[in-house]
Image 1 (cartoon, rainbow, N blue to C red):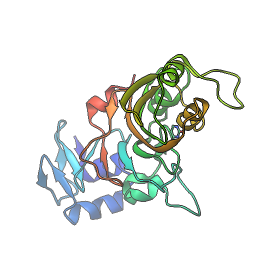
Image 2: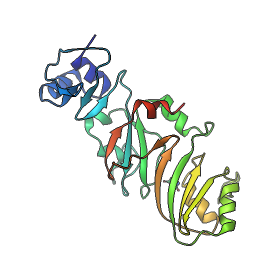
Image 3: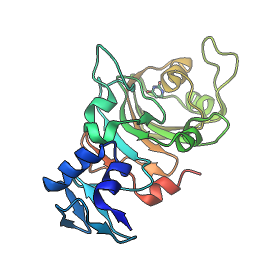
Length: 231
Ligand code: URA
């Protein structure tokens, strides 16, 4: 059986000393009850939280963040706040972003310590669809819908885009589902059909949907089902 302070130190970025402090100060719960004793022996199925966020061994972390506009998808930036700046220090250590968003794009951002897992989301060889809510400057014409569905040629890119899913919700509001992730792809695809993206919001990556309870800037740990849905 593993000790509570060891469990916290292994499943977060906290040192053993800081893990002990976090436990003593009442930030850790075991099976829903605050536990202030660092050397508590944990039963194998115990559910442990730090500041209300689930902690899981062997130390890999998986989070979703509702990215606000103006935050960059980088781990460090000297001029702008980054996605990692929105997370508490004990969770942000060693995290990287699985699928970046432009600074002005909002919505679902996945962060993890697990490189193999994020590779399955971002690798061009793996078909992991990403769905965006796209607000347009002009009504989307029928021919433009068909072009997006079939694949369009982007400026300075010889390879046409792969077929995309298009759901027209309103003449200037669509859901676009892509199975690739080229630089500024949504904006360039809409430019290629003579339109312009006014606002862009990511709703879904694979089977993981942005939690509607998360306000911009808020995050939560992924559930085991969400983590396991990426294969
Ligand atoms: N496509 C874009 O153009 N921007 C994003 O942030 C994501 C996809």
